[in-house]
Length: 98
Image (cartoon, rainbow, N blue to C red):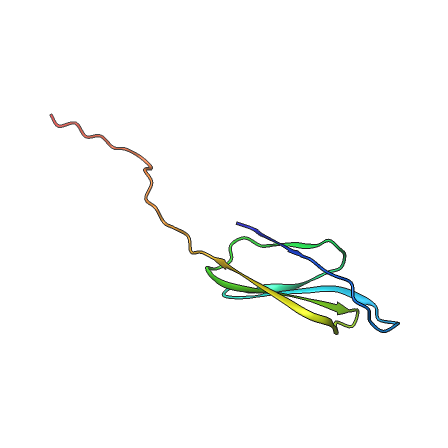
């Protein structure tokens, strides 16, 4: 299952000349997920399906064009549950005794 991450932002004042670069999103956990920079609001992206089971932490950090952090980062977490394996019928064989 894909997971959609939406990031809520609020405006803050920074020194004149600061150029916003976007929001850098990192995901840490059992599977490797490449960091993503989101450049325009609304800040949202889809985490690829197929993540290994386990606990993940998502961090969002506003950055300037030189990738210098602006303001404080925010974090949240989610868990990917392991798949449940269930035997389901695939075929039926009938043998008739003579």
